[in-house]
Length: 81
Image (cartoon, rainbow, N blue to C red; front, side, top):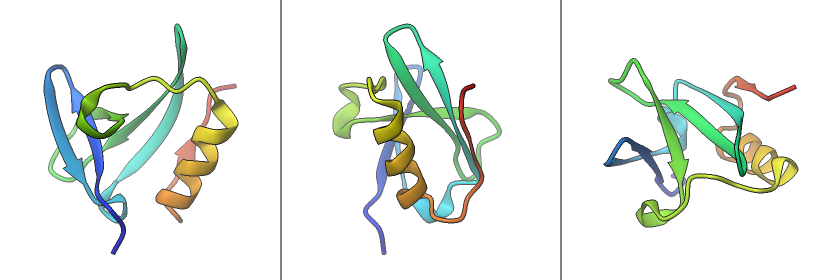
């Protein structure tokens, strides 16, 4: 089983196993990129964060994309143009 990832929405943190993610997409942010995912039991998107919710923006698109493709295996992943 893969290690759970931490996601946040507003001030709430939630952990989820990558294999339970319904869909994910990477979007541009002012200072980098964010990974948004729909978690089980939720209709809205949550932002991937570092453990403990310290950071939710990643400066490197290729690195974030590579991580997402490995973590989410066969899940659909949309990328910014």
